[in-house]
Structure formats: C-alpha cells, structure tokens
Length: 67
Image 1: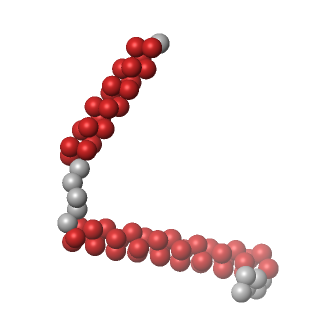
Image 2: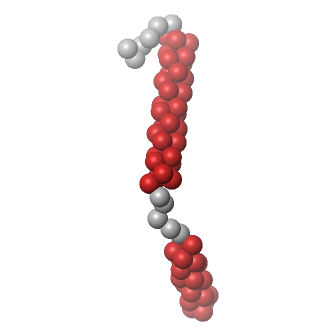
Image 3: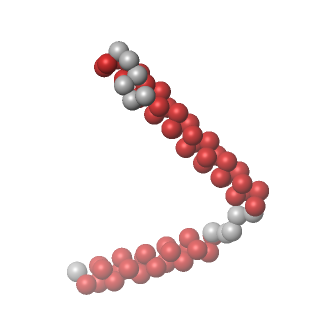
C-alpha cells in the first residue's frame, strides 16, 4: 500500500516536470488571439443563454417576464 502511494507520487512529480519542461510563455500575438477567442466564446454563450431565456419566458408566460 505504502509503495503504491510512493510510486503514484513519483509518477506525479515526473509528469509535472515534463509539463513544465514543454510549456512556454506565449508571445503577445498568441496571447491576444487566445484572449479574443475566449471573449468571443463567452459572449456567444451569454447570447445563447439570453435567447433561451427569452424563448422559455415566451413559452411559459406568453410575455417577457424578466424585463
């Protein structure tokens, strides 16, 4: 049992070292592209949520209940 825990910990440490060795700081261009895509995704999900809320509100009450 104890050796299993030690082996798992050793494997975790080795995997962590590997992740840190292959990771790098993104360039400003890469960062800007990622940030723009994330913002677009958040806005798209928010808009979809709003549309779903309006449709459900219209179906249930027949009017815009949340406005």
